[in-house]
Image (cartoon, rainbow, N blue to C red; front, side):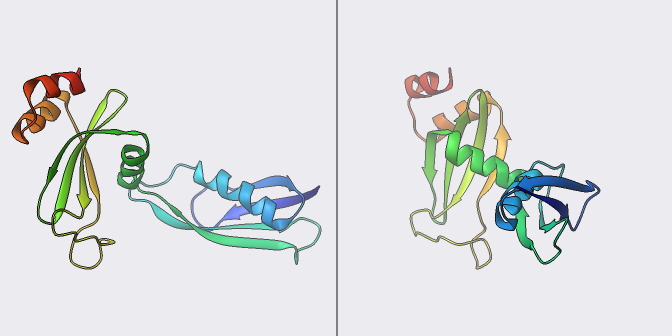
Length: 155
C-alpha cells in the first residue's frame, strides 16, 4: 500500500492522507471523502486530486459535481419515495411523493406532450418541494383520487 495526499480545490477541509494500491484507488477514496463535506445548498463542482507522497508523478484528479439540496431531494424522492398521486399536465407531470413520513411535490418533465428536457432547452428541469400531509391530501382529492384512496395513502 502506498500513501497518498488527497486535496480539493475549494473549501477549507485541508488535506487527507489515504492508503491505497494505486492513484486511481486513492482517488475513489478521496472522492468519497470530498462528497461527505459540508457544501453550499446550491451545489458546486469540485476538483479532487491525489498525489503519492513519495512519487509526485503517481497522481490522479477528477472534477466531481456535488449535488444541490434540491438535486439531493429529487434523487431521494425518485429512488426512495413512493408516488402517491399523479397529475399529468401538458408539459409537466406533478407527483405527490412520500419518503418515510415526509411528503413532497415533485415536478417532472414530460407531461402528455412528452417534453423531456435537461432543463436548458425550453422546459424547466425537475423541481421538488416539501409539503405538509394536509397539502398532499388536498392535492390527491383535487386530482380526482377518492377520499378512501387519499386516506389510505396518507395515513
